[in-house]
Length: 262
Image (cartoon, rainbow, N blue to C red; front, side, top):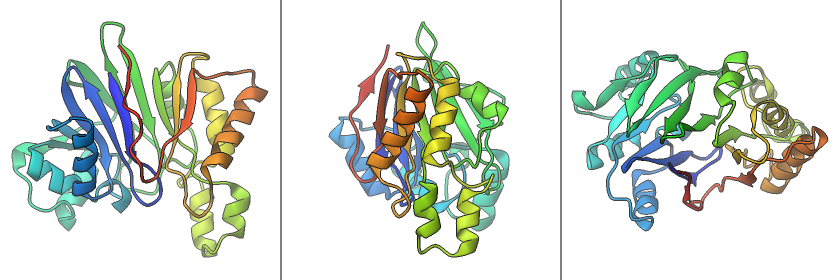
């Protein structure tokens, strides 16, 4: 299993996953050109599929372009696909590239499997994903854009080797921001985004100490900083006597290191 971040934050999200020689994206919320350039820099020239979490622009901007250019399948939930097709946001796609994925129903891919799970967010049918691969069944768990952690979310995140989780905002920065009051309420609400402290508390419940490689993702550009997110989560974990295998913040504009676990 290989993984790296390509872009992460309120301005756009895209992440790479390699499984048994096949190449996938989780979300494609920046330009296709930018994503393809990042993949080429890591000697990745093909793309088997793109897994979409939900229809918001910062998660789908480059999906249609890449699907057409590289012949990739696009996976999304049935209601999310209904939204795509009704609004034409991905452009024209070959029908064979349209793949439906149902929460709770694993799909075989790349010598492993992927399972979508429901998350609480203000979108049509938003999901997180877990990917399992290898003889040891190592797991990557992915959950951004969630207002709170349900029991379903927690169950899917437990035991992950690689865990990418939202650490979107600092409540004090959000309250003092230029955001309209309604937007502040939306971001902090149960179908909005996790704060740094909420991310830390969730991680304290689900990570395997000394084992899980944690990426803090989808940071707000206006209501957070990488240092604040890292320090807050680290403090919460330390307060619970938990040390992750590795903790880092996903970069907004710079692709991250390609990590490999076998």
